[in-house]
Length: 211
Image 1 (cartoon, rainbow, N blue to C red):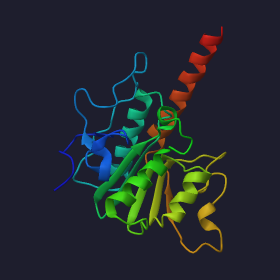
Image 2 (image 1 turned 45 degrees about the vertical axis):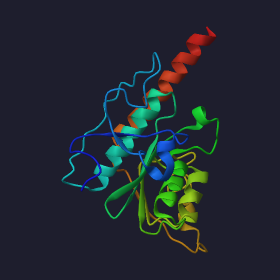
Image 3 (image 1 turned 90 degrees about the horizontal axis):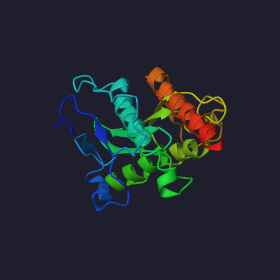
Image 4 (image 1 turned 45 degrees about the horizontal axis):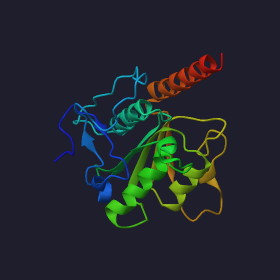
């Protein structure tokens, strides 16, 4: 059985919620009054995607990651979302929570990796695939290798800080004892656009406040 009804998108529960223990409730159908309630003035202009359950390809999982990026925007977090899949089952879902957690390590990838390890009871995620809307940074790229992820799929490359092909290829270091497969460019357009729009909004808001 698929974890969501056909056509429904998803949201995440705060890590501090009791429901989040063991991922129980970490992936929920989007519904009226969901937990990512927008703050005043932070209505995200991007609609959530509704991918078909009939074709669970890279675009399907990336669409779910994009929906988490929308949730991040609604709470004024950088709109990056991540999904981890294992054998067709979604075992982790997260978006950036750096601001609300006051934690510089609370990137979508890091939170999802922790969720996945708890879910399967093993820090080795050899059979798991990560889908994330922006290329992982140095910290997150290292975590994908240390957690032994099978594959990383990202949407938009980052030529300044990306470490899986954008600025450098951390996963290609010759002496690594684990090789992560990397795929890029899946749903690149919308994932790039939501990030650019968010930072344009932030720059506009900051300049207005300082005027």
